[in-house]
Image (cartoon, rainbow, N blue to C red; front, side, top):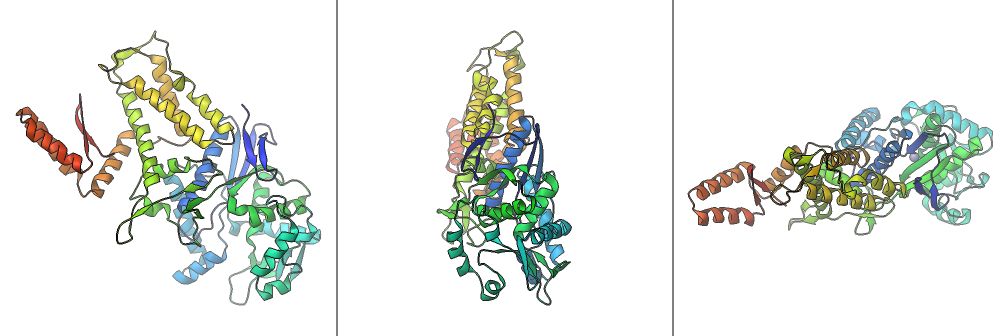
Amino acid sequence: MPLTLYDTLSARKRTFEPLKPGHVGIYVCGVTVYDYVHIGHARSATVFDVMVRHLRESGFIVTYVRNITDIDDKIIKRALESGEETAQVAERFIEAFRQDMRVLNLLPADIEPKVSEHLQEIYQLISELIEKGYAYQAEGDVYFSVSRFPGYGKLSHRSLVSLATGASGRLNDAELERKRDPVDFALWKGAKPGELGWDSPWGRGRPGWHIECSAMSMRYLGETFDIHGGGLDLVFPHHENEIAQSEAATGKPFANFWVHNGFVEVAKQKMSKSLGNFFTARECYRFFEPEALRYFALTVHYRAPLNLDWVVDEAGRVTGFPSIEEAERRVEYIYNTQLRLKAVSPKRIREDAVEIPEEIALFPERLAAALDDDLNLPVALAVTHEFLKQVNELSEPAGKRKIAIARKAVEAAENGFLVLGRVLGLGYDDPSRFLSRVRERRAKARGITPEQIEKAIDERIAARKKRDFIQADAIRSRLAENGIELMDGPEGTTWHIP
Ligand SMILES: [Zn+2]
């Protein structure tokens, strides 16, 4: 099945064909490095990570470019507050960003261009736009003349008239005076005395935000490339302006596909720094494993809103994130299933048996088919669940299910876990380590240490040896009251907190 993707520009699903056979160039707008990654960023990054992984799994050679905005008013403001140089603030948060990405098992981009290292490309693009009559200088600023570009509004499906009425209300008088038209946008902003700036052909200043993505995407992927991605909030004005700048300069189509992910929402409002309703990813990891956040990001279609909920105690302190904790139980299921498969007794595995449940045999194909359909993540997770369910059934300990298992079925299941790790980036940790981290954290949240639980288990074993079943049951009930479940197996008693 060929890959189809919803393209914002043509407002429909289209079959994806790379411009250069076998190669895919993808550019995703990255972060402005003045703070830590929040849950909204984590979702967006996970969506495009799965897209890149799926393209690679389908056999494409992918060049994944994600920019880093390291010149921005917010970074300058942050530097003034902390008394650092802006470059120091940027470096610090670039390092934090990379760490946050690694923790979520997000593949690094192949190229991570920074604005501060691409000023020459920006100067060249702006010069070209001035030469061709698409941009003009005004007292140290340079503006793009929107009315000169006939296709303006085609991505966000807005008319120039509606844009004009919206634009004038948002500007201060000085800016309005410099612009020929309120809808025009800045390519270069002149620096006031004492402000941070770079020397350009138009005097000291800094680039407008939009121009960096046109300059850097075309620098690494060419004037026309395959996929441009980002959050839905970037459609207008950011991506609309990128199209205007790029296509005005080259006369060629800019990106072949425009792919946008939905927001993380809190009570139907977008999670954002400006609304103050955001959580950084790292501050939440005391409530769940990073992999749970990754799984959570995959639970709805990438274009749909993802609803985040949390609970607070009487003092208003956050005490948990129910939906992400639910996602964590799904991740636990992946690891428990891996362990169960590993524990299958070799005596039950038969070379000559041929039966492989189709949920296991066809899992890689079904996963690929789900993702080929406009990256249908809920279906991908449903197919994964069917796969896990069958592996569990296959691995049922002898006694409950004595039938022999085909060697080929075990191999297909092992391969399925590798595919799951490569494509969805799930189940990549060591199962025992993951599971013990989770249960220790949950025990701690209940004010119990793992040592206390182990001690209770030992006491229960001793009681049972003495045939004091009343005492043994009392210990089990006491643990159960604290949400701790005991599981008696051939290798002793283990504990678990669901
Ligand atoms: Zn961008």
